[in-house]
Image 1 (cartoon, one colour):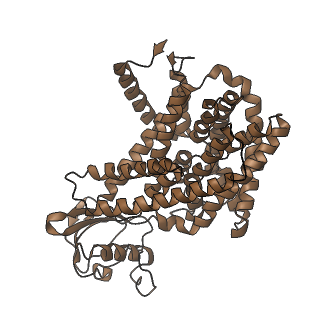
Image 2 (cartoon, one colour):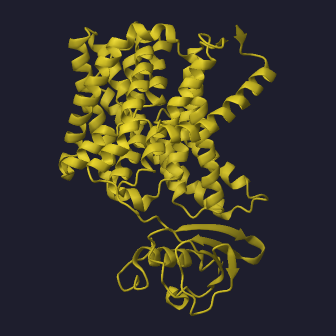
Image 3 (cartoon, rainbow, N blue to C red):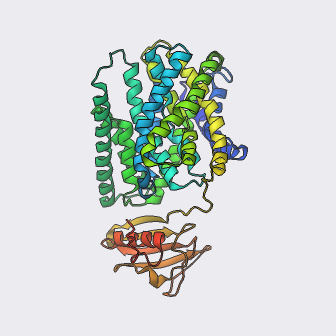
Length: 495
């Protein structure tokens, strides 16, 4: 057996696994399989049942899993555009709270009678399985071309529902008796976590805008550090660290950050690293020899969850919002499970809850089955329901680089497909005083624009602006991007 402990061996194996996992992304696209499933397979292949690497430390697995989830939530929050999800905010909150409660209750009741589980263990099964996975949702949904209402609701759900589910699992796994104060504790943890996230996100954004860091690469590091600090701060005051992390990242991701494109690119890479590491780790921790013993209860739980609990919870949560049945069907089938249920299932195992080992193994089987079934059929279902929008417009990309010694900033703008900036003459931009478009890059060639220059999709603009005019310049670009040359008369502000 190969023992994990030699630093040289660990570094070599880790680098090789990372490289293989990156290549697996391309392979998964060609095969039509979710890449996260391949990462699990790599971990199983490395494990003691195949290549002989022994790893069975549940405490370390859970700790590393939570750290990876923090980074995944950070990436998800930073890359979520507020204007794209704000119309789905109430639906997303309902799915992450009401739907979770309904799913736990329905799943627990069914498994209590079908599998003979006692009520506490049945509720643990229901709680662990009720959380959708942010990594799976972010990686699948953003490439489907589904409208922003559904995508926004599902992204918010996956980013927000980890918090209440984690609290529920901890309460149920504890040996202490659950009292009437439990709901009040949940409300406190969620409210405090959200407030901490908002406060640290705002303070972090304001601080980064005023900081004159000596290297561009330090801005992404500082941004991610703020989000991780939000988790720590929430946990220290017994609030929801997961919610604090996601909210802080959401606030930062929609703030006027210096070197925004570099920050988002770094966060995306860090998110991929966390996903790869987490799924390989969980595959390494699993024991294929035990999985056959839990195949039947796992499949029963999967059928209940997929065809009863999830549709019913979505229907009840979306009832006040009059969501059409087609969209409800898509929301029901989009409840993707991934690493989160496995990490949460380790909590009762570490607490020594009887039957927790079977829960961990069953959740692993269930994640694999549902990832194959739902992940591969989701694009087909979206097309059959008529929810895929061909040529869905993308928001204009605006990045900024501070020029501290000149009290100025450079804005880099890329015109996306479907933007109303296409066809607008330079004079029609009506940039504020103190801002000017100094360069246009089109088809790899750069030139200084004239008043008669007409913008095109794919153009990249370099705008020089004073610090005072910077916000107004970006608002004007975003307003024209959304409403065209008559944005001001249409009431579009670009906020």
